[in-house]
Image (cartoon, rainbow, N blue to C red; front, side, top):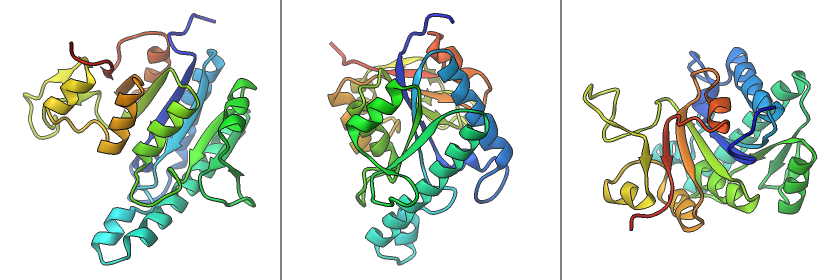
Length: 241
């Protein structure tokens, strides 16, 4: 077992990451590949927690824009994250892992309630933990849920998997001359108005001095490379002097 740069991590996946080439829902081949990469990280010696968005099923903000009550829409979005968490738990268990889903809203017949000490104990005992339902309240994204849970469990690193290989000065899909940043400080992100995470999530990470790495998990093996200390994607940490 090689020495890891990080002992405990929280990986944030978007719901869209589970769709693959589908228009909606979950692509079994994609979730199986993601589960295998998470297991490889654990097998290497890391304690791994996950947060998965619900955008492949429902988006509360989008429903609200269409006329639905925002609180109701966000509650539906929270339930979508539970569906995705259960799907990931199933994929992990099919590979032989021990995984627990912990929900910020009470849904006891389906999964455990989120209790911080129990979550940490699961990690210490070698279980993968999937946090569902965001922070359990409307108007907060799963980015905020990921940042909050990462801080609560004492994660060494928060990882955000995206569709691009880091943070750019402008959209690389629209501008061929877009420049990727290897490293940024929290102050850099604010000054340059870079869309790293939503404001609440970013404030939590910044105020707790939680390192954040943005990378492209569609490239196989990137997660394990990061854990072993390779400089993949964009690292956000610290403050400007």
